[in-house]
Image 1 (cartoon, rainbow, N blue to C red):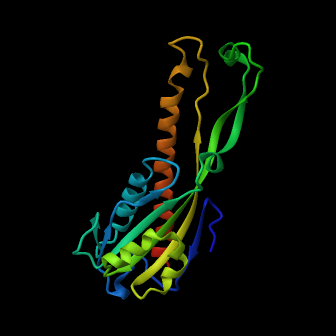
Image 2 (cartoon, rainbow, N blue to C red):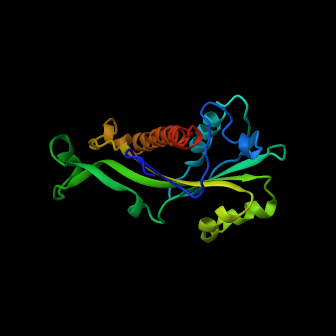
Image 3 (cartoon, rainbow, N blue to C red):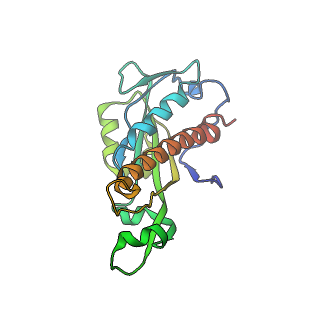
Length: 217
């Protein structure tokens, strides 16, 4: 199925869950461990926000106990794997530009005027795998991405879901003619802008996962 917003959800299993109740009770699962999601993207520090939002979202079910991190006490483990293409230039796409006129003109010196990006969009894939009573061998299978399409046949796999997520963030463009000008801090501001966009993306991914999968009848 496909969400017309920015998340496309493809399911590898057929199952039916009940809204506002433990979505995994029909599988004998009453507790789930959620370790830090694996980050195979070109972006650093993306796992933390994603993991946190899924812990908070699943923690809303009163009869489902959530263990942050790995725990032998849990009935199942939810593995998240974040993926992008291998190079940033193939992931980040310019969404809008600004021409170097006005207060930017003095900053470029003798160079010919050009367009500067003012916002980017990027796409990330998030694989979510719920494994009941996982062994070390079961979890090791997740280190072999080529096996992912076939893991739904594994008897301990409750589901495999893939979220295709699109985010965007604004870029600060300002003049750099003096130390007190805004452009001197562009890098710091743009880094903060991207981190904020990841937090927004994580909240949406967790919310859509609940709405489309966990609360389905």
